[in-house]
Amino acid sequence: MPKTWFDTAPKLIDVAMGRSPADTVIRKGRWVNVHSGEIIPDTDIAIVEGRFAYVGPDASHAIGPETKLIEANGRYLVPGLCDGHMHVESGMVTVTEFARAVIPHGTTTMFIDPHEIANVLGLPGVKLMHDEAAGLPINVLVQMPSCVPSAPGLENAGASLGVAEVREAMAWPNIIGLGEMMNFPGVTFKDEKMLGEIAATQAAHKTVGGHYASPDLGLPFHGYVAGGPADDHEGTRVEDAIARVRQGMRAMLRLGSAWYDVAAQIKAVTERGIDPRNFILCTDDSHSGTLVQDGHMNRVVRHAIAQGLKPITAIQMATLNTAQHFGLERELGSITPGRRADLILTSDLTTLPIEMVIAHGKVLAENGRLTADIPAHAYPASARDTVKMGRKLIGKDFDIEAPKGANQVKARVIGVIENQAPTKALERSLTVTQGLVEMDRAQDVCQIALVERHRATGQVTNGFVSGFGYDTDCAVASTVAHDSHHMIVVGTNKDDMAIAANKLGEVGGGIVVVSKGKVLALVELPIAGLMSDERAEVVAEKAGRMVEAMRHCGCSLNNAYMQHSLLALVVIPELRISDIGLIDVTRFAKTELFA
Figure 1 (cartoon, rainbow, N blue to C red):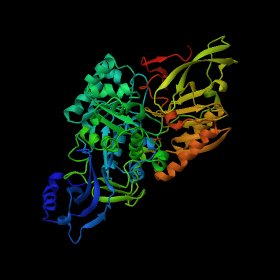
Figure 2 (figure 1 turned 30 degrees about the horizontal axis):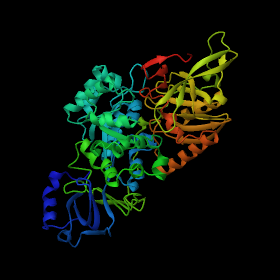
Figure 3 (figure 1 turned 60 degrees about the horizontal axis):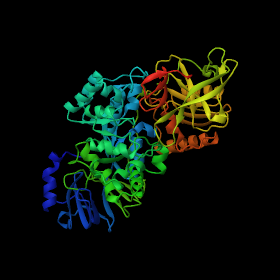
Figure 4 (figure 1 turned 45 degrees about the vertical axis):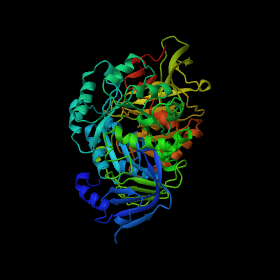
């Protein structure tokens, strides 16, 4: 982290006044001023001790014999990009490796919610990521997870956090606020724990993250807003974004690996004329393949511009708006004196090629390549060997018995929606053979199973899912299963499902694709069953093979793995699976498999 403004203020003033030289001067760029909405040509920037000291027409007074000179040559000077809401664990890599992957794409600030590792390892897991984040050369600020488990009574996670843990974490130096408040019914029904966590965060003068995953904009929405959450990233419609902004929230519009929620909601600005100041761009969940191949926040900004947003407005939504929301306007989000010296040099504001990335005054990447040395971070043994299945599984563990005497059943089926987090609650007629309910490839209905992996109970919960399009004998298993992170197995063949589950037990967690008894792809995630300790490029290559293997099995969905990983997320409608059974998220209650 750079020195504080208090520690550097005398030096900043001296450099600005020409009394002492800058560490770095950038000459003759086009200043993208997110405060005024202008692009100002022929601008110089002077940097000292990791902060901007002078931004103006001529910084020659700040150049000394040791000053490093960078010629912008008319390129745009853009504030470093900020991701307002994201989960590092979705990248399947450590915080350090995530940072290494996104720095070349211009991301210099991330607001991370480590509730994935919290569901496995509890508060010690959060502290591991908090401490790792604090040692990086960019700004990685941590939101304390709020809902562990995400829906008490509907699932059992590997750990539990409450008001005492939130209050303790608020004193940690790198905690910026409370992570997304997913238990929105808990807020509207005045759950003591939920309101206590919000109160502890507000008492620490920090930001409360929101998560209202319901299309109902009536009284439950109003009750949720009154309960204190300050932002929300779960909107999918233009009316969602408008409603949040009108009620004083920040509307966070996400473009992750599989969540495409910007295009519909940005119309609130481009077509409805809503003031863009309270809109923030974010990614939420991006896997390593997306990061390495497609980009990070630069991808989101380009996408927003392609939807008709003015470039400078899109940049504001990924810089200043985010900083203001978290109370960090004097630290981040703009190229102005006193702020941390985080910026990008680019030759085009629309396509946004990232030609140089500077963070805390240091050049970290050039022309899409990391140039800084960022050492790998080692996790302790306590963060490993977390997949505790209790026993080897066999094909019969995935048998689903029909009601006595039935030749056909009407089953409730989880329906996957491409590029969105919500699911559909479907019903399908399925055939019964020798007392067991059969899958139906013609209807695109295969099986889903949740395998308990925190307490070695050996428990398997079975159900049905539709939408993946698998057309051969196969199974896909993952220990990344938001939010309680048991093991999710989806397949068309029960023996393959057993092989996939057992393989993840052997390697300590990850994602595996099996077909006809053979492992087609494997991504090992030994840290909490969520993250790899390998380089992001290596994990991206393995993830690419995993996606290709899923396609080989008949799945054509965009980033189908992300949908797979959310099938147990019992806080987003309509239908999910947990270790207690099938969950109707419209009623927040367990429901029967057969209608």
